[in-house]
Length: 270
Image (spheres, rainbow, N blue to C red):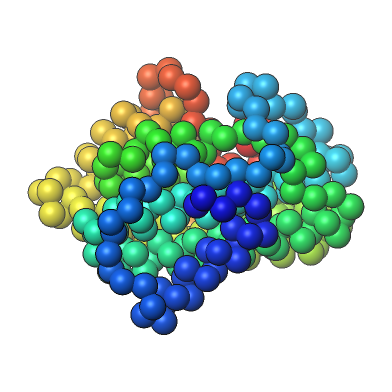
């Protein structure tokens, strides 16, 4: 998390996961997690409200969308590592296994999109980005249930809703390679959201709480935005998000604060 250069962060994340799986790292959590991960000089990070709009349907707009997605995946590496390091002692080995696996996936996703950007004549850092996603980590650093409720079960779940439409946009533009990359990402995100719902249910069982009720409460408290349809029902069911849970939070609007924008591949809020 303290490695700023994108390529170095990808390699470091892969190395941590490899060493953990090889049994070279102890189940010991005696180092405080950083409040904020290291970031490269580029991209320039702007407030979400200052982000330039992307031209929908244009080649530049698609390039800007890929850049936004690359930034999401880059930040997601740190989100997964932070979950493993911050809550691993409390949650146990399977939790660490799962979130380090997510970190490896996010590193791979970032590398794929960054390579695609270079192929298209651009690079990660060529455009501004915003840091709204890390706001979710700061907002939920005190409680594993809140972290799971907001990051995998809202932000990553939203990607299940919108990424298929983004895939279709790239296919219509004749960019099959980018579409295949995004399809690979959304397939992996189903598993990531399932990790979130599984561990959230375990926390609820330990606390004697209803998963539906606690999720609704935590989303109200910690997610700054609206959870609204359309939903990708089949993908959400595969990830363990039931219709009952969605009925509990759909169109729920949290009180106004600094916005935490969604992981929405087709949104101009990225």
